[in-house]
Every structure is written in C-alpha cells, then in structure tokens.
Amino acid sequence: MESSQRFRLREPSSGREVIIEAEPDVIYRDKSTGEPLEVVGEILPLAPSQSQLPWAVENLRFCDCCGAMAQRDLNDCPTCGRRMAPLR
Picture 1 (spheres, rainbow, N blue to C red):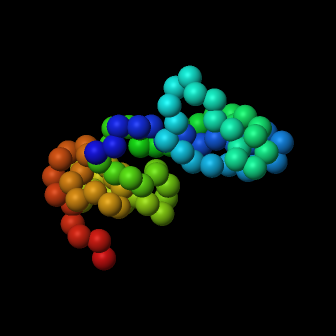
Picture 2 (tube, rainbow, N blue to C red):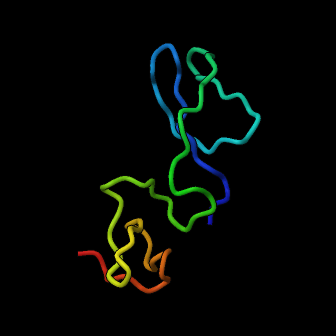
C-alpha cells in the first residue's frame, strides 16, 4: 500500500502538466526551465489506497454486490468488502 499522495502539477508558462508524488511544503520545479510548478489538484483515490489507478472512466468498474464504483485493479470492493467478479 502506498502512503504518498499524488498531485497534478502545471508549469504556468507552457501549460505542461506532470503527475508526481508530492510532499507538503516542497517547491517543485520544471527540469528544463527551472520554473516553479503550481499544484492543480489531487489525484483520486487519496492516499493510502490499495489501487494505483487514478479515478477515470476507463479505470473504473461497478461492484456486483453493492453497485459502487471501484478501480479495475482491485479484487475486493472498497465499499462493501466483497469479492468482485473477474474482468471480462
């Protein structure tokens, strides 16, 4: 299980974005320009999570028992704890 939170950071001048595991109170800079990156948002699921996949339509599926959404790389539903059916 991972304990670091992933964030989406953006370079203000070019608009390039990067997703990294960021620590609080640390200023991250672009490697090529040295410009400070600004935090745009947190990546779901929030840490700590059993899944490494971000919450996006292509990475989610529905639990057979409770109907809650869960990441495709999980075997057990994080909401009800029951085993989900295998992917087809």
